[in-house]
Image 1 (cartoon, helix red, strand yellow):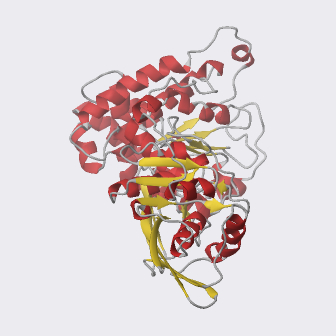
Image 2 (cartoon, one colour):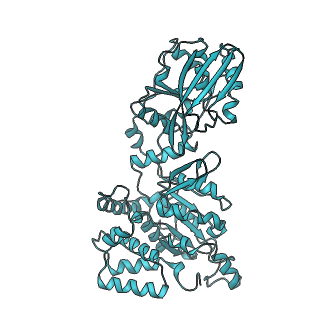
Image 3 (cartoon, helix red, strand yellow):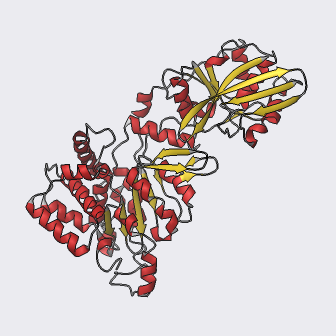
Length: 511
């Protein structure tokens, strides 16, 4: 008897429906075709034990299973339940006239229990698009899949629940989640707050500008000056995610298996990989492609602490994602694209010893050592970072102040107002939402300068020997400073402040 059941494969961040054809005939054997990996080939052992422990059995006949499309490689153990239900129906142990209206996924334990799967949200979206009535999946993943409206999503803890549903012995209630209500729930404010930061007013100003315009920023300062402390507090002043951003972010984390018994992600992600990270872990890829840190930071912050300690080839792979806000991974057999619109926050010491330009500490590194240390960061990468700012140690008097600094919630209100101005400005542009996303044409259009501003910028370009890309960065940052003041046009004082935030372009840093 031939039976068709349906599962799904996640490729990149999108799902593809897989048709599982099960045929049982005379003879003995278990034949699985359609480019399955080893985890799927081992499924027969898990299925046999799970069925036996729940009162059913793997038939002693010739079982042939085809997973179509046969030219698409399938991986992982999430097809266990799909195969098990197909075998039971094909062998006549249960009747299920409507099985072709459902997508079924889940990894089996030997007692029939289900383990969580990856990409549940992507699978649910695809199932709805293709007109399926419902989706059976492990109960651990039910909240993220139930975000999709118009699809009956059933969270199951044991394969017997699916068997009883199709054989008519029991009914299941689909999980229903009000996506908007889930998204609009009052969120706990982030753990880290700018009110904890003593002094550093100029640095907090830079962080506010970066948050308001979505600009990349690098903090340069000696050990203990507060670079990491400041970076960890940046998410607390970023505007809340829109529903669309929340769905995009949840989808990526679902594919990576990072959603733990949760539904919609409503906090912007903050990722901080160690400097020993490989290029694959950063941009994604691998034998079975997975999103990397820059995609997991989508709509959030990627923090690279001690930037020169990262391998140069690892840093260089970020150049294209920083510019295009997506990463394309090409291999001989596949090409996939992951979204990666993130804010890069980097920190570094100004020298190997850490105390260059610190008047209270001697310079212990030779010029050649300093040049070798700083040259780990290429000029093209630095050009893609809008704001460079020096962080100096906080004086004792500031550390002992009892007065609380300005809290994140107040700064965030100013950031949101500036973002609202930008949203209105770019309303007619589909993929542009804030200033950092402007291309050259838009930056010329929305950052028009008067004669005084042009002369000031010309002088800075000549003296600092800035690149054309740095010129665009200055314009964008100046536009954000103007937005924070609700100014219609960019003035010379906005340009002057933006030029100050190019520390690494000055003589004495990179030579």
